[in-house]
Amino acid sequence: MVKNNPSNYHDEVMKNNIIKIREVMATLPPFCKQYFRGIEEYTSTRTRLSYAYDIRLFFEFLHEKNPVLNKKDITSYELSVLDMVSREDIEEYLEYLSLYEHGDKEITNDERGKARKLSSLRSLYKYFYTSELITTNPPSLVAPPKIHEKEIIRLEPDEVAILLDMVEEGENLTKSQLKFHNKTKYRDVALLTLLLGTGIRVSECVGLDIDNIDFNTHGILIKRKGGKEQMVYFGDEVNTALLDYLEIRRNIIPEPGSEKALFLSLQNKRLCVRSVEKLVKKYASNVTSIKKITPHKLRSTYGTSLYRETGDIYLVADVLGHKDVNTTKKHYAAIEDDRRRQAANIVKLRDT
Image (cartoon, rainbow, N blue to C red):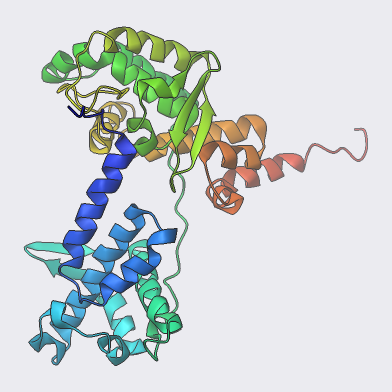
């Protein structure tokens, strides 16, 4: 008899993404299958799924706006359709993305959304153009929208303390929320302390298994974006919160498939990303009504604190799992500017 092993979170995510990719590909022109096979070796399933959604939207735009293509089903388009598209078509597509209807919903895209969708389209065209299967590459002629940097939203140190105190005490929660809080308090404290004390991504957090924690070295083994495994270390506050929660966790009988999961829902299943997002919003909204705090903002809070304490941008990049330190510099440029301002008064030229 074959036993079913408890599900590995990352393997399950990959399988679900593959299923979704196949579902989307069934609505695309047949030649797209060749493209997705061609990029499989160097892209994650998450990236390919994102590309699939974006590419489908482009063909839906062509089907809606082009009088010739409107008469054909998208799944019957041939590769030659790509050579029918002009630079002006791409520019019209980007304008279309500003506001369009999907079913009974109005969808908008800001500069980042447009840039991502143009990038997906460039990838599709580049594959067939470099394979010499098409003769034109109009997306490469269109400049991506200028991205205006947003101010990093983060919690200040006093807000972090208030947040964790609130989670422990259940302050400002509604009566219905308090009922659940008594069951989830130790889990919520451990989860938020872990996010704030290590800066790991929410997907890395929910993917943790109990045996990924090494209390001897104060380390957790996580799987980064792209599949790379990395050891991240935590301090005494995280250590205490995790140990307190594990005392409760050991008495919970998980649902099949979630036996190894560190963080469980009230249904005793592995906690999902969406649930953590709701959890963070619930608590953080009682700390600040101005800032929209998400799990990613907790990551930014940790990165800011670490950089302020160490001044080492390369350490921050490594701990946060950024492949390119320029990504880190871009996010923490304002803090670097503050440090440069401080440097102005450090060196004294004459005694006064």
